[in-house]
Length: 203
View 1 (cartoon, rainbow, N blue to C red):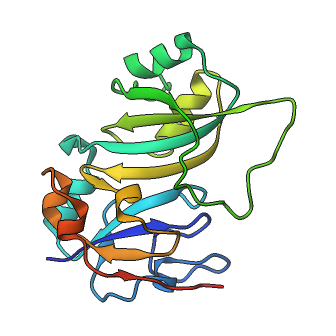
View 2 (cartoon, rainbow, N blue to C red):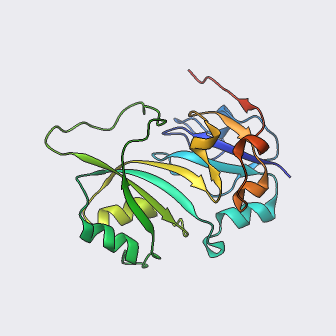
């Protein structure tokens, strides 16, 4: 069984098949027989897991298993307690109501890489970083949640799936490493289980 953690770059498609105008997973991962367990939209960045095991792929991707996924969202404006309370209680998005989320305001992490291109800077409108942990992962869910409470997401990074944490792995965009499947649900030191990081410069 192979489990790979990839830091998916901005605008990369979560697929190996060729795309007419965008990079794909094939541009940075050269391991045969692995497929993404879930996906990230092209305009989202961060942790994407790939595996060659179908049962594990389902276990990671299917919302019914309620595997926690943690995101950092840079939102427009400064969310007030009412908005944070809505996110924590569950947000009615029309077609479904989200499960309660763990939400907190955070500073911009020191480990965070610069995005190219950066978000559009607007001097009159501040931005805020919000950490959200959800257990569903439906299409564009985090973006829809923050927009529904009045704070649109400008940049979105998935930083953890279960116990696999992108900051602990130290992966830059386009880098990947093989990880132990036990990291998904067991508390272990990353240094004990991660393998060599394979760097691919796509410039």
